Image (cartoon, rainbow, N blue to C red; front, side, top):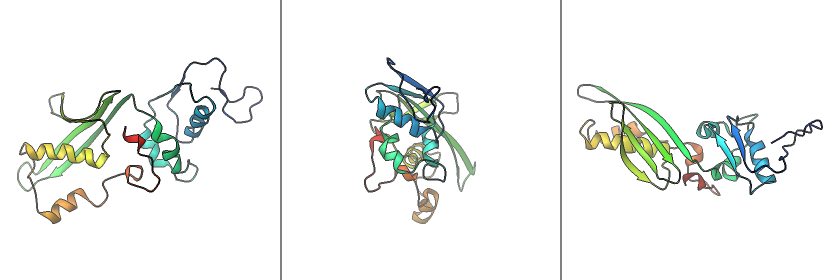
Length: 188
């Protein structure tokens, strides 16, 4: 997509005869341009490559960034065709080894399910769960932790107060929370 050629008025303009657009590594400030392109040519596919949208969503609403409403208006409708989000966690225990490091990834190859995968420590992953709906990051962490509890690596419970303190009050990012008039299309 072009920015107007010699008459650069700053507006995004589609290129006639284009069958598909590919956007590579856009910043949060550039995302509204992609939305404008989509609005101008709604029937032309736009492939977004390596945007790290989960990270960019965190900037929404900050000064000089698009407003948080942009998530519900546009970003929530972007469908991940290939999604891989790795996360690493640590958990202290009252018995040796006293600290358990674990990691996993949330994976999807469209149109397949979102899969919670636990790193086995041997260079491979083990599938724990597959769902059509994407879990929030806090839920994903709990799925990994529960697998370690089931295997006896972590204690089943440490008492309600300690269990609460380990999980914390906030387990979701702002865009994963239940909000009035929020779009939940990001989950599929």
